[in-house]
Image (cartoon, rainbow, N blue to C red; front, side, top):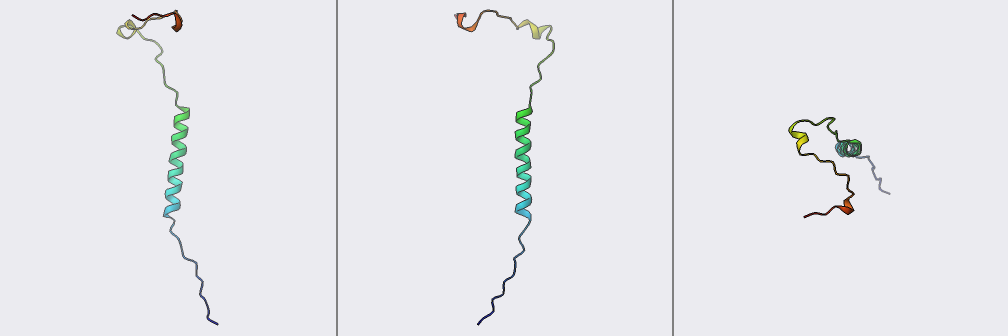
Length: 65
């Protein structure tokens, strides 16, 4: 009977490292998207406030010309 030699082939770690880096980037991207809160200006004055109007009329009752 013939003897069959079985040896483990040493695989590269590069696909594992690239996969972990990609997974980390996806997790960071999702966390950044979910935790991003836009910062609203605290106070507008001068020219920035000139174009601002406060309208108490509900949107259903507004008429647009």
